[in-house]
Length: 485
Image 1 (cartoon, one colour):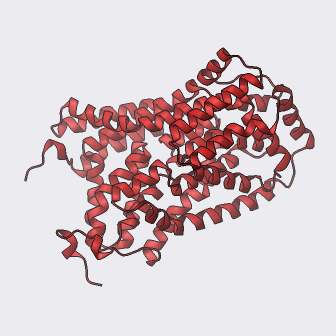
Image 2: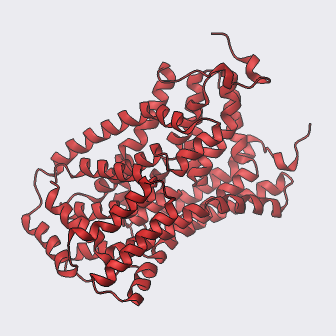
Image 3: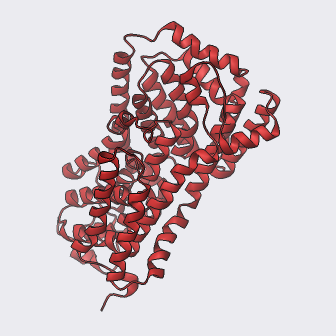
């Protein structure tokens, strides 16, 4: 039967053209011009993909609808970004973030800081079900503590990312953790249990590395004067008291009660705003300004000012605009069949479960890299690879885990991806200002890239790679083609 316009499949050569050209333009922008602003190369990528669609017989309206559909799916994530911007501005104004930094400098040691920071982010992210909310709040506070301890920003960011995206990966409240089993027709808690064999060892190895590195970085021990100058700057600019941690505790409590993320975060904004008014002496108009444009203060310590002068909805607009353009590119690639054409080539070539699991993980990673969208990197390979797992007689839980390993936890390691763009912005890494050394957080986020390594290792050894229950396999179709054991 001839392909319909709803089922476009360009040749593999044509499908690769917009992807290769876009990545090439992106490389020129970043490495030749030294300008980390991926927006225009990705916008050009949309135009290149549209040309492929027109060649294949699609109309512009069809291509446009495909791009806008994926953008529309991202609106809940964009809403979280907007709320995180409001939270950062109001939590600084209320003294919540300064209090976390103040007590962190008092309680934590430089040697154990990275390991403790990773564990803290993992716990909070597991409770909240959002890595972005964790990075924008607890992560920002940890960046301040790390600055006080004279820990390089990229090491602190790596520990934050490792912990926050671990929690997001296995939290039953997480959107991506629910998306993967929904796409693959598996059960949520079965999916979470099946991710533990890769997630737990990756986290334990990361914890060990951060502990060893912490003792190495902490050998010189930052001067007492530096830590006291940070604490003095905070104490002089805010009324520091444990009660100011109430917004953070309330948000975590509501999340553990399974309240949806958006109203939970908004309540955190409201409570922090009230504290800022009645404790820190802010006016209502000040609160509106902080929530929209971010907080502003002069503490007398330049490094502390750089951390405290941030937040607000407008601070998220660079990230949001990048995400919308990247998602438009991903949507155009999906609508024109470019991504599906590439994945279909892979599915036809794999003959063993080792090759299948490796291809599923790498396909999710590639979709993440090209399309810039963790949701698409789960949904598209999840749909495309399902029949192959059924044909080989292996559980779709393997596929759900593969999409999370290549999707959820790889997204923060790709700077132009939704996850990576948010991390760079929320943690004030200053990549667009030329601080490219802070991109070292990518290889140092050990838990994120070790999990897919374990996933591929298990596939090749047969460990933790469950077979399908015959009752779960399709009654007709490819089931008869499964190879004999």
